[in-house]
Image (cartoon, rainbow, N blue to C red):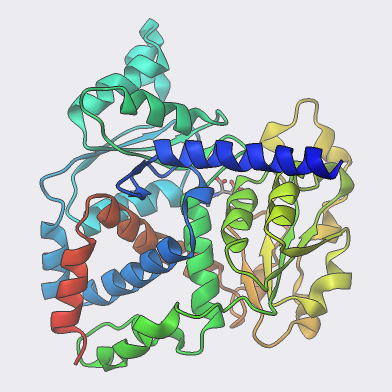
Length: 382
Ligand code: NCD
C-alpha cells in the first residue's frame, strides 16, 4: 500500500512538473495557467513588484513612467464567461502599463459562429496580439491554449483568468497578496501615494521575506467543490509550512479529493468542517464563497441549507481582532453587508489588489520588472 501510494504520488508530481515546464521559459512562468506554477520565491517577487507599482502609480510622473513600459505590446482579453472584476482589473492593469487591448466577450460576434474552431480562433489571435488573457468555461482549456501557442511559429503567452471549475490562479495570487498584507504589521505603509510618504519603503523589501502564515488558520467556506478560486489558493497556501487549513462546506459540496491529496503531500495540517459558527473563533482568515449553482445539472443546490455557510454581522463577537475576511466576489447572502465597514473586511482590498497584482504579473511576463524595480529604488527609497 505504502509503495503504491509512493509511486502514485510520484507520478502525480512528475506529471505536474512536466506540465509546469511546458508553461515556463528560462525557469520562469511564461504562460500563467496553474497555481502550482508559483513557488514562494515567485509569489513573493510578484507581491513586492505589485507594491512597487502601487507606490509608483501614486504620482503623475510615476504613472507616466509605467505607461511607457508596454506601449509597444497588445493584449487580447478573450472572456467568453461572465466577469466583472477579473475582466476590469486586467483592462486596468493593461492601462497601468500602457498596453493597448481589445476584447472578445461573446462568441456569437466572432467567426466561431461560422464554424471556425476555438483552436483556430486562438491561432488567429496569436497573430495580432502579444498576450492572450482568457476566461473559459472549459476545465483545462487555458492549458490547451498554452500548448496550441507553444506550437505556433509566433509563440505568445496566455494568462488564465478562470478555467471551468478548476483553476483561477490570478485570483489566488491577489488573494495571497491580500492575506500577506493583512498579516504583516507594516500594513499599508507601502501603498504610498507620494515619494515623501514612501520613506516607509524599507519595510516593503522585508515584508514578504518571512512566512506570515506560521500558526495561522485559514478557513475556506461554502461551495468548495465547484469554486475554482479556493482550489487555486489552496495550492499557493501549501507553499507556506505552518499554515492550517479548514474546509467548511456542506457534505455535497466538499473540496475535491485531488486537492486534499495535494495538501497531504505537502504535509499541511487540515480539517474538514460543516459548521462555520463552530470554527469561527479559531480562524485568522475566512474565505467566503457563493453557491456556484450555475454548474447544477438538475437544480441540486436548491436542497442545500447554505445559511450555515454564511457570515452574518451577529458573528462579529467571535472574530479574532486580526481576522481577515475575504471573498472573491460576487456575493449573495453568504456575506452580510453590515460587515463591510469592519476593519476585518478585506474583500474591497482584494478588488484593488487585483489590479496591482495583475499589473505585476504582466510586467513580469514581459520582463519589465527590472525597470520597475530600478525606478522604484531611484525615486521611492532613500
Ligand atoms: C470568481 C470566479 O469567477 O471564479 N470571481 C472572480 O473572479 N472574482 C468567483 C465566483 O464567480 O463566484
